[in-house]
Length: 158
Length: 141
Image (cartoon, rainbow over all chains, first blue to last red; front, side):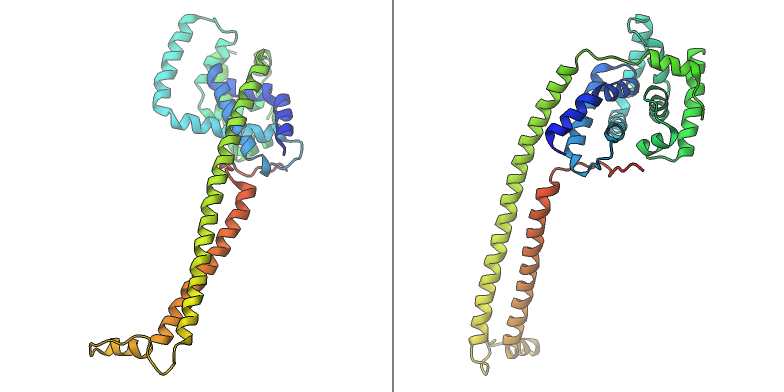
């Protein structure tokens, strides 16, 4: 894939990718955009191996998902402190962000459940596609969705 | 699995919209430019290194061949070297010095030839796949 073709595809898909990562980062826009940039650089470097089948978005999401998991794994210690701090500050700031409650609820989910829920409800992927993107079995995705949905509903009091 | 209506509506309502798309693309383009510079620099460094290796091996093989030609051109009824010590193994080495030298040189030259082939293949492979990060090969059904 040429650089121009890659940039054209990214221009078309960037909003979906950034939205996905924004949900995974629970509303932290700067983290989400950093991860989006990292994912896109990785995608660009491996674009020679991309099989053109009109599935650029899913391919990009898979790279973004792996980048997100690596990022979470690399800063796990800091993350716990950071999340606690953000949780307190965001609770006290009381809806200064538009979708506070959903992001706060998403924050309570483990990364894999959060990813499955986001891909299913926000990006509209089906279970088979989510299993391909997250490299897990369809049964595992179903369990993640079921657990994630229950936790979210309890948290959001739906 | 069916979608939970309330959750679906909540997610759809929170679908974010970004006003800084142009800034994002500009930042990405800058990063890609930087990646290209680094990639070209690394490719050049590795190519130079590989070429130096190939030259070294070629020189090794050529000098090996010359030495082997010299060894084989020596009179066959005289040993290449003699030892003064009366030891069984050293005497055996002296008696078979021609064969031993030729065998060692042949092994070194074989190793050199294999290394040249391997390096040439690496250089050809490098042009296609250099700097490829570890991203799983992803094919949709």
